[in-house]
Structure formats: structure tokens, C-alpha cells
Image (tube, rainbow, N blue to C red):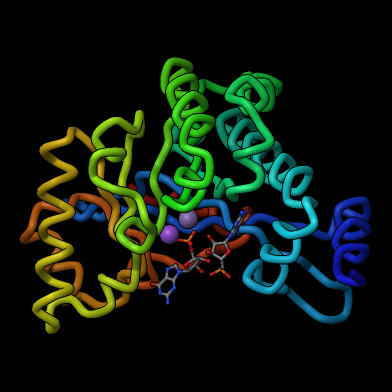
Length: 253
Ligand code: G
Ligand code: G
Ligand code: MN
Ligand code: NA
């Protein structure tokens, strides 16, 4: 594949960037974390979205070195912010299914340790699909990550095929409610029921819950009313380059 070769050269030529989207408290709108989102800065063409190349990288296996780079870069940036005296907030990275299958918890920890970071300042976002593809491996990796103190979120929650019996056993810290459900809130009764039920279930399971894709004040109001405490979406901040993320860290509550 031509694109696979271009992606491999892009890594060598340092054309990948991370942008950072704020995760914000619904109680006081304080900044509580970031999600790192990959961008490909193609010379003369601007930023290419990961939606256009992650599927190819997943197919060819390039996602493994690329995913390692993403985690390493997020850790490097987090270290730099801490060294500049910034308030510590967790930074999350997306781990694709194939990356998860090819790595152990020790592999991830080695990258975090390389930067001398407290493990609780790094969060891995993993989709339900990634967990279900190889449940035994995922269970053992997640259990070891938990023992190390590295946070794990289930991303796009509600869209995958995980059963509640696995959810009960999964050693995770956070559920991220998929934005397809947030979209219909508060008008669509089904979406409103699903969202309020996920929030209540997360609370009873002792998990943190984040609502993704929040674009409107009415959505934030609905979520606050149903005791969701953290949101991520265009309403509270788009993904921004590292320098703009530093501005947020230094100026915001
Ligand atoms: O940022 P954007 O909306 O274009 O992202 C599109 C998709 O790419 C999302 O599903 C997001 O989770 C995924 N994505 C963004 N950054 C990364 C990354 O670093 N690794 C992986 N595996 N997926 C990512
Ligand atoms: O699959 P994942 O949840 O990691 O995807 C995250 C992607 O969602 C990011 O690439 C980001 O650009 C996108 N995103 C974040 N907030 C919003 C939002 O409020 N609305 C929409 N439509 N997309 C969003
Ligand atoms: Mn994500
Ligand atoms: Na998501």
C-alpha cells in the first residue's frame, strides 16, 4: 500500500503531531484533563485527520510503532508541562485494538517510566471492541495496568459489543459515553434514558464517567442534572496544539 509507505516516512520525518482536547468539570468548568489526538502534518497540505489513516495503520500493523510514538510523545509533553510548573492533570491517549494485542502492560509502563512520570497522570483509552477481540489478553493487561496505577478508560462506551458481565470484571477507571448518545440529548427519549442509565451504572460500579461530544449548553445541563461530573466536547474546548494547551493549563482554573 502506498499510504503505508507514506505513513512510515512520516514517522521518520517527524510529521505527526498531537493535539489536546480539554476534559472539563461540569461543576465549576475547571480543566481536569486532556485527550491527546493524533494529527498528520503533511507538508503543503495541512493537518490530516486520523480517521483517514488509523484504519490503514491498523490493517498494516504500522499502528504498533505509531501508537508507541503517540504514548511516548504524550508522556514527553506531560513531563515538559510538569517541569514548567504546570498543575498536574491526566493526559489520555487512544490505544487501538491491534496495538493493545501486541503490547503488554510492562511495554506501556516502560514508556511512562522513561519520562519519570507518575503513572496516574497517564490514561489509556481503549474501545470495547479492542477488549472483546482478545478478552484474556485484555483482562491481564488491564489488571497489570491497574496495579501499576495507570488509568484506563473504555472509549465510545455503548457502541461496542461488550457485555455487562465483562464490564463488571474489567479493571478500568472510567467510562466515556459515546457522542452518538450525547447527540440526541435532551430531546430524544431513548438517548436520554441510555445516557442517564450509563451515568447511574458507572456510579454504582465505582467508575468515573465522561460525556463525549458535548456541543450544546442544553446537553451540559442535562448531564449535570443527571450527576455526570466531566465533559469533553466542542462546548468546553476543541482539540488544540500543545502551545495552546499550555495556555489553558497556565490560565484556567
Ligand atoms: O480527532 P478526530 O476526530 O479526527 O479522530 C478520529 C478518530 O481517530 C477518533 O476515533 C479517535 O479516537 C481516533 N484517534 C485520534 N488520535 C488517535 C491516536 O493517537 N491513536 C488511535 N489509535 N486513534 C486515534
Ligand atoms: O473515538 P474518540 O472518542 O477518541 O474520538 C475523539 C474525536 O471526537 C476527536 O477526534 C475529536 O475531534 C472528536 N470530537 C471531540 N469533541 C467533539 C464534539 O463536541 N463534537 C464532535 N462532532 N466531535 C468531537
Ligand atoms: Mn478517545
Ligand atoms: Na470516544
